[in-house]
Length: 92
Image 1: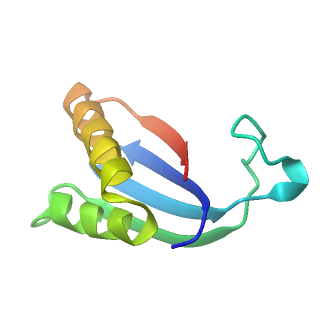
Image 2 (image 1 turned 180 degrees about the vertical axis):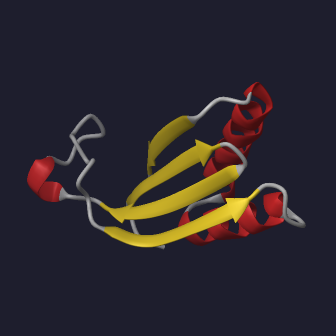
């Protein structure tokens, strides 16, 4: 596991999880602008396919701790239930 950023994008019935390396040239604090950080992994899951929660959790467990995985999954479920397009970016 490496430190960096997890970005989650929700668009209609698709959830995309993006792992990014921390861009120290923009600063080392959580508030630093990390929008152009280098992407090292990406997965897109259609929520209509079989077991989307398990697939998302597995990818998140590869990137972060179970605590953060649980919080991200709660956010994903809440956001999907509201039927809105959203993006969240978390630092780990």
